[in-house]
Image 1 (tube, rainbow over the protein chains, first blue to last red):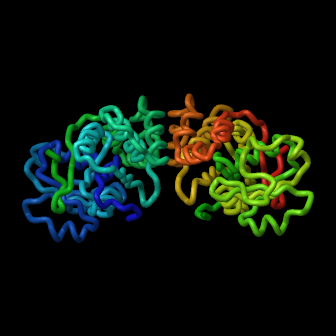
Image 2: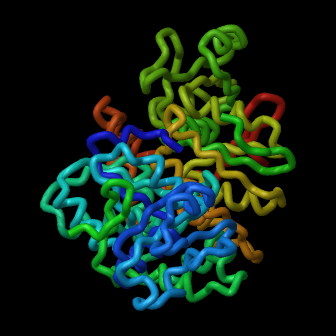
Image 3: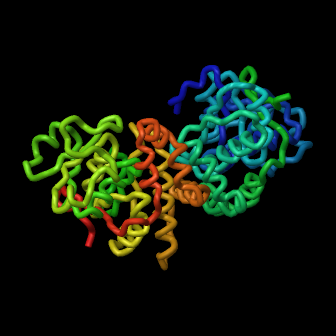
Length: 226
Length: 226
């Protein structure tokens, strides 16, 4: 998935349904940090007895893991102070592909405005890295990228220089900003999750700017940006 | 560029700035047909003395050719009844990549509604093939795809089944439908053409549904669909 030159840049990895939404939710519930890993084997290898294993394959929780990839399935009590070792199909792969960035953040609809503030304070060019689903474009990730651009535009005092694709995503967001939940429920990923009984997850993930937390990668762990 | 299975389908090739807009304009001015070819050599080889050579490289008319790739540079008198042998950087390549389709049309903003009517009467699944610029996404082509979807939705009595990317393009169109000309002048292709003194071309290409003509490929030539 490494098609970009991320060096010297801020990268926001976006996997709205559900990896990056879940990361934001985990840190919002007091988890100490999240270690994104690509494989189940790697997760089992590095997790200590104090850590929580979390992750999914094909939208389903990995057998034996404490948590799946749902932003609403855990309590603060369960995750507070814990290190979460986390592996998902597309989201963690996106993160792994951009570890050379100066700053690597996790973005979602729930923390879009917080991401915008972070991007401006970090003062670098920005790449919005939409995870998609198995190398295919996922609507919810594109719409989230457009929302983040729109939030940056709202608070930045500089002219934005956007690629054509970024412009299209900002317009796509504008075209559905008044019906985000419906949009997420009508795209391929949302339909799949709803069919698995996970409509609550989709609803959580479509709420705009509900969390003021930005996960940032430091020494292999996603931590809340101060 | 051949990533899709086009067999059995209707394909609309879209290169708004400017190849498909120019094709529609040429047929609208009475040209008999347009033969899209990939190389300058091929164009020189197949054109007879009665034919007109047209085309560009890097937005500039090919030396010795009668016409460039502008939808506004010719008169009806000049092109009426003529066969045009046409080679452009991205548009003709897109067409060549989809010749296995059941029906291959040329779409642009100027003939979007006419394309929508054609798609419905041809009764096949549809692929909107955005030419882009050197394998990169071009905003104007995505917006045009979204406009065509929106026109189909307006007149179809069936539920549309769209890919996530098609949904994003329809939303992108909705996000800028009230300012198409500004949008085309602000994307990479529009900026490039305006800098070359071709703002009139961009303005022509951003006018919605001004021409009721759909070019369709028959035996190697784009002809007006009856």
